Image (cartoon, rainbow, N blue to C red; front, side, top):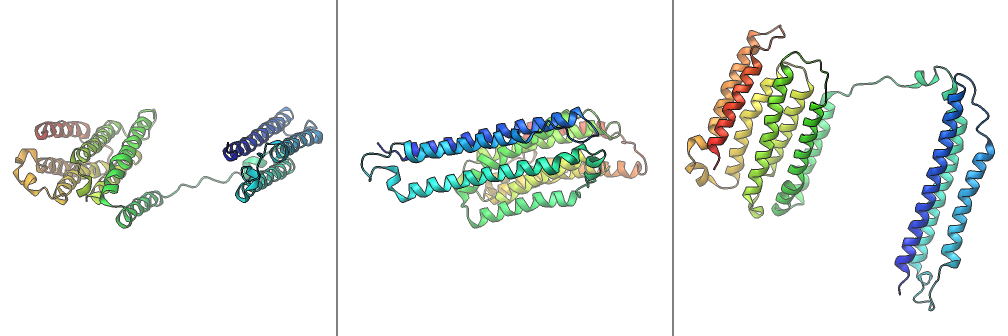
Length: 351
């Protein structure tokens, strides 16, 4: 019977045991320090942190390491013949020595860090006002930087697929990873929005936000269903347009939900104008012009585009009329009518 798998399991179990003991010692020492500081606030640390407690902990840990080394090196059966023994191969010995060196190095680092924390960290907590003055002032990260970080990831994803991944792999990534991940994040964003009880938004704005956020998430659902029904991984060539749709969704959701500018609802209407256009481009890229041309006008994307443009113009007029005030100009009613008409068009376009 080969003993290499058993040796690997034994070495990993020994390292795990050492890690557990280190963690327990750290918790005990940390709890001891917290009790000492809590019992004498504003004064010097108490004498409860006795040096022999640290010494006993270190001795127990060192004893455990020595015991593990003895068991692995001397007491573990090495086989009858040298060829079948795990110590008969150079790779096994190199693996064992490397793991033990890593474990001992981590142990030394833990001991040094524990004593450094005892000497440096404790007096700082016992000084009045010391911790408050050492806390840096919070700095708001600019919105452009945050959005740029996500945009860089999207561009990197595109470059990776264009250079390395074939069309079948791209389709599998979109169906099995990207769209499910986006839908999961969208549901989390909706749940986070539902759990926020307080807001600085004006009266009526949360309702409008919910209308557009729910509708945008529903469009992502429809896009995912459209991609699944396509079911032709060999001819998939619309990775850019799918990813652009998802990037626009995140941008619009962030703008509507997180910002307070009055123009965010205008941008939301713009998204509902662009989304059907992206669907038309998606169909055109996949060489289904005959299908697109034979579809009835009311079942095509153009009624959705025209409806969104009409309400977008109405939103612009309302923004001009209510400029300089916090009035919504009937925005909640207008958004509700738009979503109802949008839903009717979807029912009429359903196959």
